[in-house]
Image 1 (cartoon, rainbow, N blue to C red):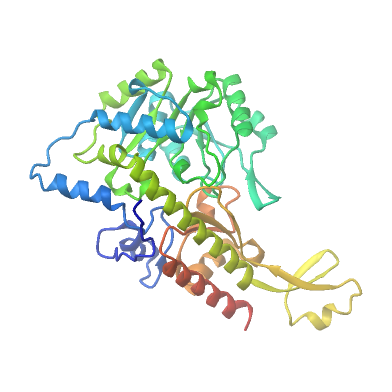
Image 2 (tube, rainbow, N blue to C red):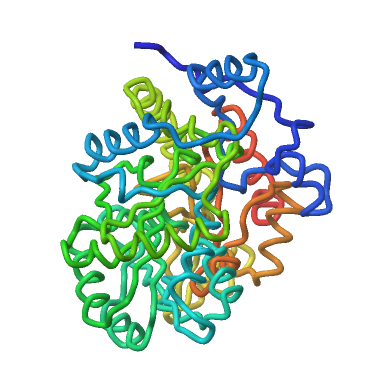
Length: 428
């Protein structure tokens, strides 16, 4: 088995890379370390890039078509990893999952229809709902303390109320941000409510191959629900090849599949460029599985590193009295007048440990900063480009999304910059 080196640093500056070359433009600053957009800084698997090079060496870059190998690789991958059996006539192609969601909304809804999402959630969902002329219905997730720390849960009592009258739901499975992998029981309850209310589910499962826990495709939890679901999947996040523009969708109900396939075909939205079908055909393989297994081990170690670093470096003295907690040392003399005062330490920057993917939702709420102050702290003081949690909708305020799909040296640099900013603000 090949051994892959995820410590290798790749200079992406000057390669027309959004993550590195657009950061100075978006933030208006040149000194920021980009740890935001969800692509990894790991080299794309060489056995795949070698194929791309060989194809280009052929000398003709004409129109591409879907080879049978594309269908076969997707079917084998789903069967092997998720015990999900699909057929050729249930599969389709779109150049990207957000593109696919945009077209699905236009195909199956009309302006004014209600579409439900679970904020804080991947921000293009809300954008595409609005662009389709639909009305966004929010069912905010609840952040609860559990055995493994804070994690998101679905408020099913609220969902039962909010789902009424909705035409569609966009489900993020696994969830982004936060990295929650929904359980079979949770997915079943969602399916029951969707069936009861005749709600079409558009399930974004782009992060599923990066799950540390068992991923369950939403379309597999209930035979009836499967007929009312379109699943979107792609090799792009998994194997760091998002720039090629290749995604697949699955609809097991013939009527749903044919309606969406016709819409895409009529608009000429279902074609790919010369290399669009290569990622799935090549990466969904034994070699791909080996690379992914090693990548997941490395990502897990990066997550462990961040979790421990936060525990070790972002604590401060706290004084608690009259039910209130104050982070200070200067006020200690005044507070000690109160007999009930307690002095201890509190971790001020925490994280939601992801059950899937290379994205960590950092929790800064204990710093007591406004949204503007938090952005200034991270950008101007720590010199980091992260995704502001507020952009993910209700419940995202006070959070920042950190991409740890990078060599450890890059991650260490980012965390040291955050620590330096914290020390200057809270320890001096």
